[in-house]
Image 1 (cartoon, rainbow, N blue to C red):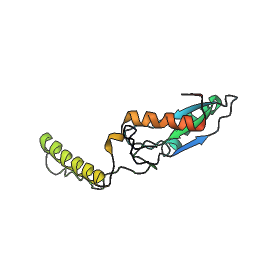
Image 2: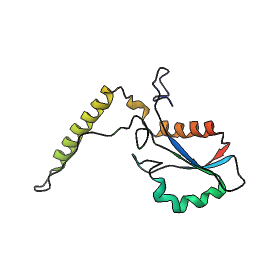
Image 3: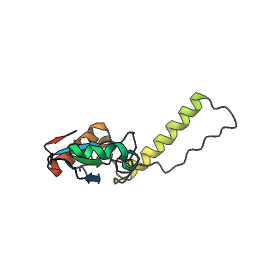
Image 4: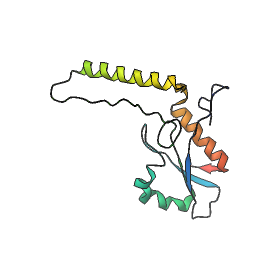
Length: 143
């Protein structure tokens, strides 16, 4: 899918998906499993939710779409820098916020250096990824 659908020259990124066939008669319907988050893997989270998801196969296929930037998607937007907080002394709220801002800014710079267009990583983009997968798989109806 395009990394940034608002940029005609956008690079393409990988947004994997998985599909379990439905067991009912509704061949053109699907139930899309969307992981919580932000940052959770839709595919990786499936196993922990299988008990309540598998019975939904009676209504259609179950489709898991990875959130862009997470899990098995490429690029995967993890921050490489580890953040250790010392608990031996109280930490003032302003110091915590200042430290977080520095670390997040460093992470952002690293992604931008790699050519990542962060404008393409948001809820609207993920919703459009789900629609793109539904269209590619030929679903006329999905939940």
